[in-house]
Amino acid sequence: MATGFFRKDGELTCDGVPLSGIARAHGTPLYVYSWDAIAAAFRRFDAALASVPHLVCYATKANSSLAILKNLAALGAGADVVSGGELRAARECGIPAERIVFSGVGKTEEEIAAGVAAGILAFNAESEREIEKIDAIARAAGRVARVALRVNPDIDARSHPYISTGLRQNKFGVDIARAGEIFEKARRLSGVRMAGLQAHIGSQIGDVEPLAETARELAALADELAAKGHAIESLDIGGGIGIGEKAISPETYAAAVLPALGARPYRILIEPGRAIAGPAGVLVTTVLYVKRERGKSFVVTDAGMNDLIRPALYQAIHPIESVAHRREQIFTADVVGPVCETSDFFLRDTPIEQPAEGDLLAIRDAGAYGFAMSSNYNFRPRAAEVLVENGAARLTRRRETFEDLTRLEHV
Image (cartoon, rainbow, N blue to C red):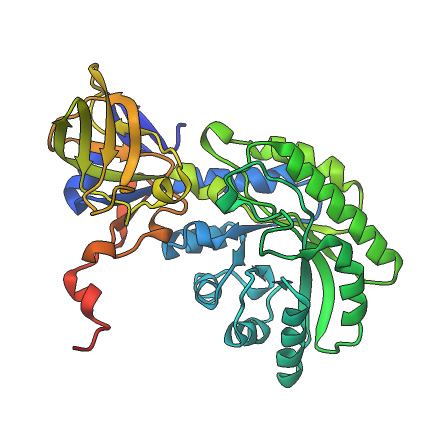
C-alpha cells in the first residue's frame, strides 16, 4: 500500500486523503504530514541496524510537532534534543529520559540541570568547559551524569557550508586528537561518567563515504580509550542523511557504517531527523497572482519565506507541483511569496506547470526544518499543521491569530 504523497484520480493526496479537501477545511498556508510515511522511515532505520545493539534517536529539531513525537515514542524511538524546550517536549510526549541524548554547543546551566534531574541517556558534550559544568551541576544534585564527548573529525560532509558541522573550522565538538587528553582529565570528576563518543559531520549528506569514514574514526578512538581503561559504552555516529536527489536509503547507510564499526561491543546510536520527517510533509499554498513583467514570470503564493526559509537560507530546492490534476502547459517562472524581501522565493527560473490564480500548489519535502524554522516576520501568523493518520486528517496545530502574536507584548 502506498504511503505519503501520491496521486489518486489525478489529484495529489496524503495517504489517499485529497490535499484540496484538507486545504478547504483548514486554509493555507498549511503543513500536511503523513504519519504512515514517518513511521515507515523510522522502522526502516530501526530494522537496518537490527544486527547490532542500537537506538534510533530522532532529531527533534527537524520537526517537533507534539503529535509526531508522541507517535514516535510509541514506536520505541529515542530523541536527540538540542534545547531545554525540546527535552521537555520529548519527555512529555512519552520518550523516556533513558532514550534521550542532549546535543548542542551552547547548553545553559538550567538546561544541564534539567537533563541531570531527568537522568537522560547522555549529554553530547562539546567542550571541556561543558563537561566541568555538567560535573558541578550533577554533584550539587547528588547525581552522576552520563557524558559522550562530541569529537570533530575534520571530515567534509560535502553538503552546503551552512549545514556542515564536522570540519575543523566549525564550532561543533573538540579536535578528535584531543579526546584522549579530555577523557583523562575527566577521570578526576566525580559527577560525570564518560561513557561514549559522538560525531555529527553535517546535514543533507548524499555520499555514504564521509559517514563511513566518521564511523571508522569513532571506532578506532573508542578502541584506544577502552585500552586505557575508559568504559566506553556507546558510539553515536550522528545523522544528516540527505533526502530528495541526495537520498541515501537506511539500508545503504547501514551497509556503509556497520562494517566500518566492526564487531565491537558498543551500542550504536544514530540521529536521523530530515530522513524521517522531510519527505513526509508538504507545504500547501494558494496562488495569489501570476505576474508577468519585462519578459519574466512570477507565481506569487500566500506562503512566504517566514513559512519555509530553507530556499532563502540554504538555496534549498523543494519540488513544487499542482495539487489538482496536472496541467499540461509548462512555463518558466519564479515561485515567490508575499514577504517584502527579494530572498522570499521557493524556485527561480524553473519550468513548472502553469497555474491559475486560486490554484493550490504543494511544496514537497517540507516535513523537516519547515514549520520548525518558521517565524512571524512581517507580522504573519505561522501556518496550521495537519497530520494524516489512519485515513483521516487531524488538525494538530491551529493557525496563529493576531492575538497570538501580540499576547506577550506590553504597550
